[in-house]
Amino acid sequence: MPIPQWCADGVAKLAQRAPGSARIASDIAFADIPATTLDARVPTRHGPVPVTVYLPEAEPSSAGVYINLHGGGFVMRHPEQDDPLCRFIAARAGVSVVNVDYIPAPQSRFPGPVEQAFDVALWAAAPGRPWDGSRIAVGGQSAGGALAAGTARLALERGAPKIALQVLLYPPLDLCVPARSKMAKGKESFLARMGPAFDAAYCPDPQDRQDRLISPAGKADQASIVGIAPALVVTAGRDILRDEAVRYASRLGDAGALIGHIDIPSVGHGFNILGAPREIVLPVYQRIAREASRAVGGVYLA
Image (cartoon, rainbow, N blue to C red):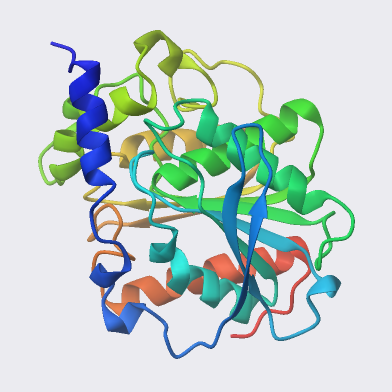
């Protein structure tokens, strides 16, 4: 039985009140890495979107930019949770990082968040930015990974901006399959419980969930993605979203666009925010920083 829309929206708005960065353990907060930031507001077709820009120590104009899109089931708004990753990339990859505070559902339903992310990429590519706008990477965790995939897809279809790298961390990439049916032995259950409400708040019409910007790992999307931005995909063994991310990684590989797939069997969804040990999180961040540096011309610092 479908969840009533008023109920889904109510659950989403309640979830938006949940705490953010307070949950991140100190050993994976990377507070030892200094960060120089500035705030800006980016115009999008859905209204202005706040962003926080993390600047590298070196002259930022000599390298490109990494656009980061936070997670939260397409409904929560906690960009500060991604502060550890953003400061790590800026410092270790030597590139500017734009952390996007996009407007989530139900305030902005599909395709609103995808279009916001794409509009931020267009803004980042415009002349006059403090970085090289011809070299852009886009990445995200969970829902943010799905938005990064959608941004890369729109850039492929429209021919601009040029996306040099997409980083997809444990993304939801097939909303055609109900969240509860993704449960299996050894998998976490919290996404299966919250998924029906979050999916309904983000995309109320089940038919719309076949769209390539929301379910690129679904059966309905058969279009060619040859030429799409090279991708680094990160999956977690206990995550109910793992299988769809693996399918999409295979599809990217068939298109010649997969530069790496990191699969960590022992962890679950959001592991780098929800307390995985540093020895697991650090190598993932190091790989992201290396790929970002290579893709957009930064100077990688081990």
